[in-house]
Structures are given as C-alpha cells and as structure tokens.
Image 1: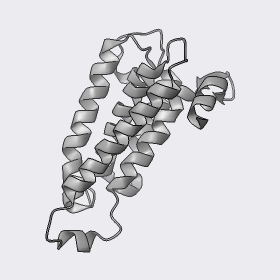
Image 2 (image 1 turned 60 degrees about the horizontal axis):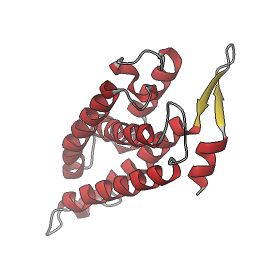
Image 3 (image 1 turned 120 degrees about the vertical axis):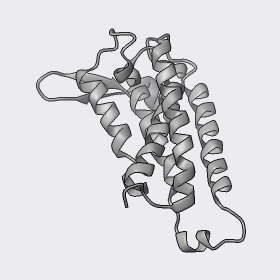
Image 4 (image 1 turned 30 degrees about the vertical axis):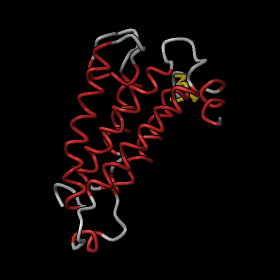
Length: 176
C-alpha cells in the first residue's frame, strides 16, 4: 500500500543546475533489490561451512521467493500507473537490479552489494535518455515497450543468479 502511494503521487528531484524529476517507480526497484540481495549475508559463515546440509539451496530459494513476492507487489501497486514507467518496467528493473546486486555481492562482498546497481542507476539518470530506445546501457530508464532493456535485465539477472551460487558457497567476495 505504501509503495502504491509513493509510486503514484511523488517524484524525487535530482540535480542542482537542471531539475531532473525521477519518479519513485524508477527508484523503488533499487531499494527492493538491495533488501532482497542482503539475504546473501551470513551471520555465521563458519557454522554454514560445517553444516551437515548445504545452506546455499535454502539461501537461493529465499532470494527467489522474495523476488517473486516483490514482483507480485509491484504488479499490484503499479497496476494504475500510466506513462512510460508502469508495472512492467517496475518488474523489469527489479529483476535487473537484483541481478546487479548479486553480481556486486559476488565481486565486492555482501557489504558492498549496492555499488553496481547504484552506479547503473546514476549513470542512466545522469546521461541516459528514455527517448533513446534501444540503448542497452540505459536499460533502467527505458519505457515498458523497449525489448532491448528487457533482454539486458534478464541477462543480468541470470548472470547474478549464476554468480550468487559462489556467494552462497563461500560467503565472501571474489577478490577477498
């Protein structure tokens, strides 16, 4: 309910020289992806390493279940949205940003899982253009109908889920 009200009624201004209005529908998936990806963090990695049963399947199941719940909530809360960003773009961005969060957790560690998604969002908002349909690097701000943005988001999500198995195995970053 809160997400529906935020998405529907508010926008967030970015920039000082030129006003850039960013709808909450663009930023909500960033927050959701970060929250879901934090489930990769382990409170007791040593205990998980010596467990009788592998924990990685349970952790992957939690990530997929939470992503499914978030997609359902986005579909419900974004059902009344009109314009270039609707529930379709909310879900596309959630899936893609979750993949970026998992990739970032794999590369930099779970504590820095926010780095890649925030960089993708800032880059897209600062120099990208929603009118430039088909620009793969600005997939986050593209309208619902952009198939290239959908393919990029799904590819990033698949890469993130593939690499997340390594996070669940070791509980640490690639370069740690």
